[in-house]
Image (cartoon, rainbow, N blue to C red; front, side):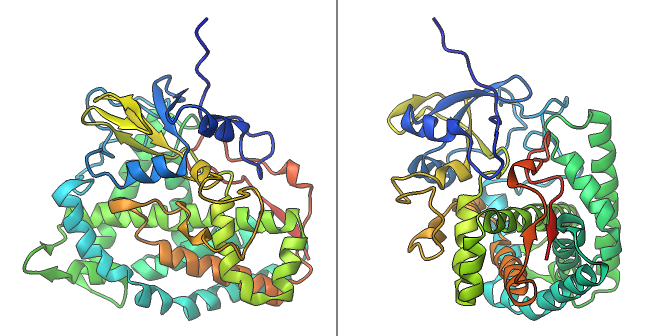
Length: 404
């Protein structure tokens, strides 16, 4: 009897605990087969070594806009990894990506991102001021988790932060798995790109002290400079990724700490634990979204199992972060864990998250601010009542109510 292929993403009865299938697939074959919301079947990797190995192997393509590649979502275009982008340039992989990466990485050095810490702290304090003034309880997503990353990325890029509701809407639609129609996706993509194009034109005409202005000016003899189309796709990518994932992670980190409050009390007793807590929260994230795809361009093996050219594999970064072969007692929250910064929450290889330092700064600032200003912080409701944002690729919670 043929074993049924499970639907993916897996059901998650407890939003703060990983689906049981993560451990089951790690214990079985290195490549499990799952069915995406589109109906297409893909291979799924959940082991740390296999996931890291695939992400760092440049033979495999992240471009699913090609014949034979699996589709992710129920929309006709197949979802965010398959969707052709208006005016898209060849910076997804290969020499084009390496050139783009060299140019943009100059703007995202650790030194430059750390220089933003005081500004991020000012924004966080202002939002907590408002939170406290309005009184308990409050929806943390609406009060801080969404506005802070949006304010940060808008200030960084030189975009008006009052547009945060538009960014949030466009991002959610573009990340759809089952929630939105193709017509809604097309409208969001058109509006987002038109907005970014206007913003780029404005920065070219009147450069300011912001990242997008800097990117319009960056040039060198080998790589030239970013074209208008590259700037548009970069601005859209940064506005989307720069707030969506960090916003979700603020909520998930806070829920992890408050659902077992001794974790939060440990940081209250020793604020020096903040960086380690952030890394452990990133490693233990059980609601990290659908994962990252790769299109296999040549016959190969994963963990000794043959994988044919033309296959599509998805890597689940967060399942890999629970691999006991890499992280002993992986389900134990330990901010002093020696190797927790080796997690794969930001990816690995040539496509690792360019904004990871900024994300860490934001998460550390938020947690440090809570510890300093809200020592009585608690969840209003039982952790099991938290609702996952279903139907979108990025995961996260619909809302999260807190008291203090």
